[in-house]
Length: 380
Ligand SMILES: NC(=O)c1ccc[n+]([C@@H]2O[C@H](COP(=O)([O-])OP(=O)(O)OC[C@H]3O[C@@H](n4cnc5c(N)ncnc54)[C@H](O)[C@@H]3O)[C@@H](O)[C@H]2O)c1
Image (cartoon, rainbow, N blue to C red; front, side, top):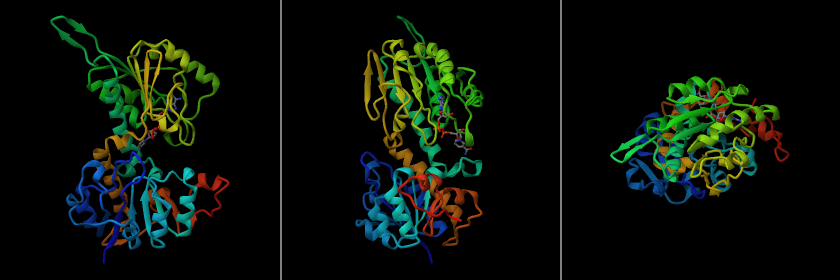
């Protein structure tokens, strides 16, 4: 007996990641998986079918998923894929259910047990499965590289026979996983780094990575370790302190987000107008609308002499490493439910109970049940 696992080729434009990499294959087989993959699933990161040893490659995705006990993907799969899955099978993927009503409806209809990767709880035991963190860490690193290539100056101090050049000043706003990785990267590259966040506990983290912390006196700790939205008075207080730091920086990386809300605006047009000429902002919050007035999600915008770079889906731009980490995150989640060649879903396990989105035709996601299109009974 074994568990049939099928890995999809991603179809969304600009998505280069794949949910299986060769290093994870032996581990999945050891758990009892028989592996199948859609032909060409690794092409975008230059992993040809032949390097996926012990994996059967199948062209037709309906045939691929028809017998699968578990289907793995990065982005939410097409509805036709779920239609082709057998009733009661398991899907593990990013889903973002509040934007995927039709898909969720189909998951319920087919009684699919769907584990949504963005729902992995942010607890210590689940860190090895936390794909939001693994992908954000890569994005934080990449933001610095991207910023550096858009600057007409270097980050470290350099001394030549003709004279010395001082280090660039980098300000990182929003010190979650991506922001802290951006601080570490900018510091390693020799910049003078400042960090800012509305959660005061990030001060110590920023200091430990070599940055100084911009203290605004506003504490906006929200639920579950995330930030809450600021009041208008708090926004003004913060802006008064931050303006000087924003306007002295050569490179600013913004990463601020509040779950379920549009990205907060951290940099106004007026603040941008006073920035150093040639300065660059890399806005990692473009998916949620951006942290700057003037951010154009997915584009690079020039506002006067300032450049705002706002790429979308950054982990995909680092598809090789992002796939490696994502596949390991999924393996670690699967290891919670697969043993001795069978799947056992233990709903007393907090990680499984919080990550599940649909099971046996029921929904466990409050956000979706609140929307008008969504009927749904909750998982008991
Ligand atoms: N397993 C774990 O224990 C674990 C793993 C990862 C993250 N976490 C925690 O989860 C939380 C969220 O991390 P994330 O990387 O997903 O963050 P996120 O992407 O939700 O937000 C990025 C940062 O933006 C900040 N922010 C929000 N509004 C802001 C504003 N107006 N001004 C400045 N900054 C603002 C947030 O405080 C956060 O630090 C953090 O507390 C993090 O430490 C825990």
